Length: 126
Image 1 (cartoon, rainbow, N blue to C red):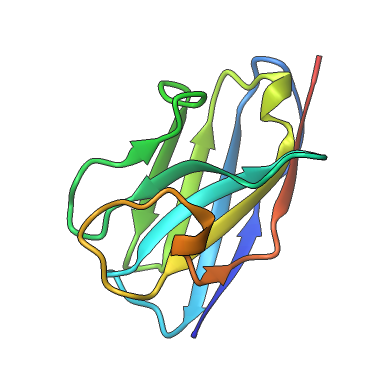
Image 2: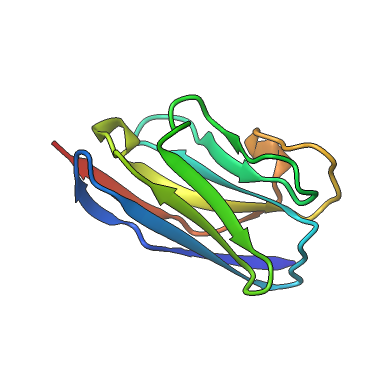
């Protein structure tokens, strides 16, 4: 199994930036699909962004496209999420997720991922 640990969350003002990181350990592989999800209070966990293990373009939720950038460093077993132009509606707990079963497409549902981190809080104040 793969273990995931997120870091980099915090409090930021509207329009500011944050960079989240996810460190993977255990049975890591560059072939795993990895993604970021988020969950705001009282809402369901939702897809944010994912990287393809086969070199296809990254996938983003429409609400973050153009503001967030997902990237992975397979040599360091890390997944990052650069978040710019943050809005109050971006406030949530952000989770890193990995799918350790093979896939050829980017998946955006929570059920497609079988490993999760503990989450890191992002709060955007107005």
